[in-house]
Image (cartoon, helix red, strand yellow):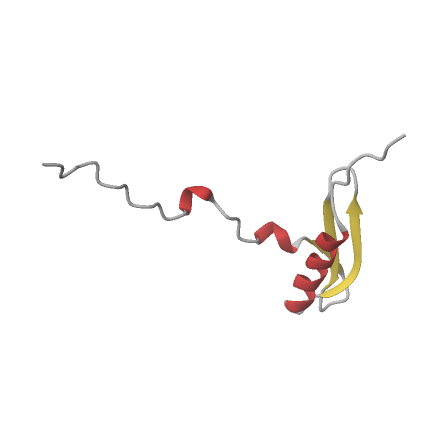
Length: 80
């Protein structure tokens, strides 16, 4: 029986951890839900309490509507 395709990859988890560490967060644990591909990083606050956060919630998303458009070529022809 073949395996179902993976919803997330190890590199996705590694990127989330790397982004959290780069922003100075202290990671307590990482939770991954393989069915929904939800990655949750649990970080430690300064008052020793845990907070769940996902650094990709506020990540910039490439919106195709915001890309600059190419200028249309002129349809005029100078054939005389």
